[in-house]
Image (tube, rainbow, N blue to C red; front, side, top):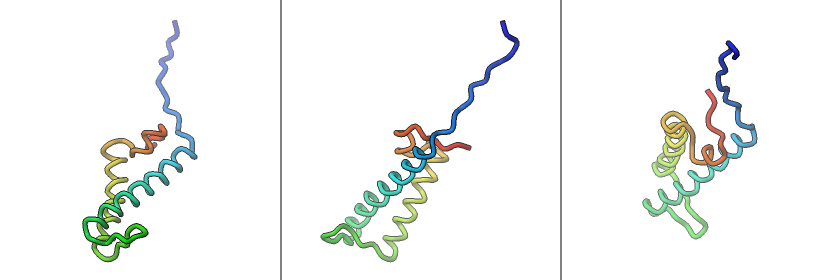
Length: 89
């Protein structure tokens, strides 16, 4: 028997996984959140949505809140979990 203790080491996820997860998270929240906020405030157009002023600020806050909540509270956003690319401390 060996006296050495083995500690599990977590490998860093590949850069492309983290990058792709970040891009997909951004687009998911931007388009879904933007369309929902646009629908609630009446700022939808035939091409999608056009947010200005307070609705645009709400969308920005939703983006920041999504990433903060995903990283700090849940340990990873939706796409990070799908790709297995959790945040590395």
